[in-house]
Length: 385
Image (cartoon, rainbow, N blue to C red; front, side, top):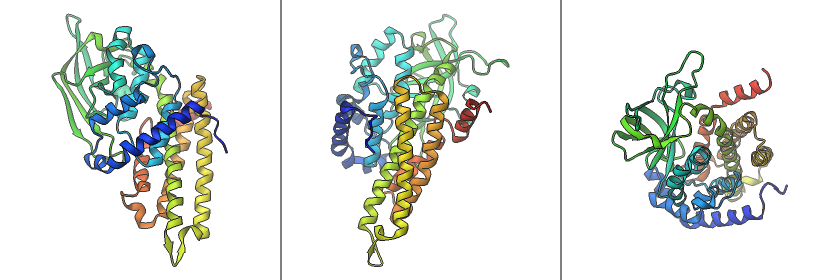
């Protein structure tokens, strides 16, 4: 069926991204995987292409577009080619919404122009060792100095995507202790300069998948953060985080669908070329039935994702809607990609084949952005259960 979620501008952008990936990513991707991150200059190329400025207002150097569909195009094209843009997805899909919504005019003029060009890469630090999805349980603290000019930041974060190469990190920290009545209060966001004294990047974590996306531990030892770098109001970060979660989960749903669609295409191509017992693997009834099942699953995921993209554009995507889209697509992606890998036989287990990378990459989608169990809780609560 013809998709109607994207217009002519989106499709023109798709062609640009597809050509860019073929020229600037595919030839070097194996080197990036081995290094565990993309070259820092690659982010500047994305900036030159205009990727980082799509949703940034024109007065700060961006294109001033609204909505998530351009980002969805990028996700789909990366999956189609079996590659990724490293930690840049966090830069645009996670960090930018907070800067646009809560930064002051002075902060926007200071941060957004280099954000657009890729000269200032960002990451967001929420998760801490031992807390996982329980953000209210964070222990990183930011104490206001006696003269009121800066915060003193102490603590640690982990699983921070883009944390190795980030120039500014949106760090969630406690500026006031929790109370029995409100565990979620007292959390603030500080936009921390990574060159600050006492700021340390720990290990670059070795992951099962997403190998070109640098993921790090971060440590803060009496890091001084100017009060001018507080994002939004002190103590209100938990509500800010909740407002952006639907888009974050929508992005994960788009990625799960796109990875499934890509795996299906890789499997179709492989079984047509691969022969067993003198016959193409595609000629066996089992192969046809497996791929037919996968096609039906991918079609269903596409319908869910497209509906969610439209709802997001009109401001109607609820937290429960996003949770439902994420739960369905990520759980089904695991099944589809596994079946596609199986059709590759032993070669499907080799990382040189993109289906193996998709298999590894998609596993985390049921964990980050809220686990599948958390998604089920959100959906059940919306049902009055």
